[in-house]
Length: 574
Image 1 (spheres, rainbow, N blue to C red):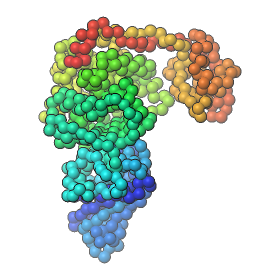
Image 2 (image 1 turned 180 degrees about the horizontal axis):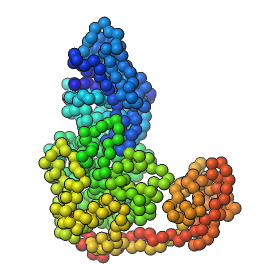
Image 3 (image 1 turned 135 degrees about the horizontal axis):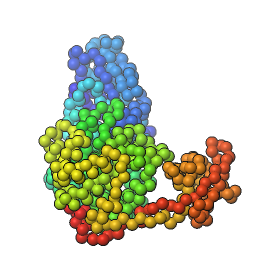
Image 4 (image 1 turned 60 degrees about the horizontal axis):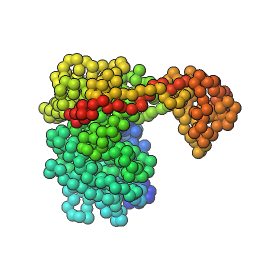
């Protein structure tokens, strides 16, 4: 069915958008079901976008109101047989108002300064009917001047904003930035790349455009081709925000506007750019077989997110180093911090990467205080596993790029079919042999410990571990109301865990002495190992005491000692 969409933003301070969908049914079509997606591809959690719809009405082309009822939480049925009509016209309109006021890469947001429109959270589709070449017209306040999107522009004149897509999936996969934002761009491989920047930033000396271009050129060359005709980077520079979401020919990034002038944080932003652009191949093309065609109204389970996210997370920082933007010392510092967090992740004893992928819908995007005790993250562990695979390839004399090339060739041989786990393992075996494949498979499919010390020595790196410098009670805290101290997380099998200190406990005092946030600076220095500490806490409004015994902090990754810099560089550049 051919559908024409109209997006109208009249009073942006009200954070509302009006969506009008126009279509023409066939004579034998007495019912139509429209749905709004419940989740957004790339962000694996049910978000129920339909909760933001404020009002909805259906009518014929002549204005007569059609019978329209809500059938499920996100589905509406237009029924011509139950409508009281003077005629049975074929043209129809569905009109709804939707509230857009959530800042994130996966939700729509409208205020007086701009509008960001996320397709899955805004535009309805049809149940059981493919939408062919949908068009979108956008009407916005006169004070705004531009739209940045990767939708195909078919505007007949400069004062009309009209776009089209091949189908519904590609239509909602192209977000829109609307307002008076800054824009720039460049060409690479005959393809235009647009840079859209919303938000004010502090002055800095970094060259965003030049560095983004270097990353785009490197990744495009690494894969060997560019699978789109246009690409758009939408960056929102907002305080205390971080995130990214990939799309087929665009990406959305949110980054703290105050940090672009700091070296480490600027490299973090470029890693985010590399991550989302790398996804244009690794998931938007090379995808798990379960992730397409999408069922937008329920969970789409897969055990393969360790490939699309783990591999991408490994490559993003590596690409920043390989382009020469980042230095080896900076890259090794990132690896050290990743290893340090992984060592403290007790959940790796209980959950495999495949299980973490399958459970993403209920766990990774809904992290609670016990997450680290019972789960692994397919981003961070996946990153380390692909680093291990890279080392094993290097030992066999196989460039890591051969792995990427094999994945891409598999996709190109059957572009409409997704990939399976066993096919990834077959690629590894074909490149590096059975032994390497077996070791890689164990890292993915079991909770067996991974000997990173042994692996890193293969490329001339010694992981320096030493007892932590302080004593530990095995708990972290957070501050409320600038001074009150609350337990945030309790480490599995730590002294706080054994004693029964709970997440959410407010620490009132220690050994009878009142404790406030400022005391946390000196409190750890007052403790010795194997010391009894009595906490006075408030739990659900009741005062109680909890006795703990301090422990020496266990072995901590202190640094990565480079034994052979040429070997290290050759591996990571190979």
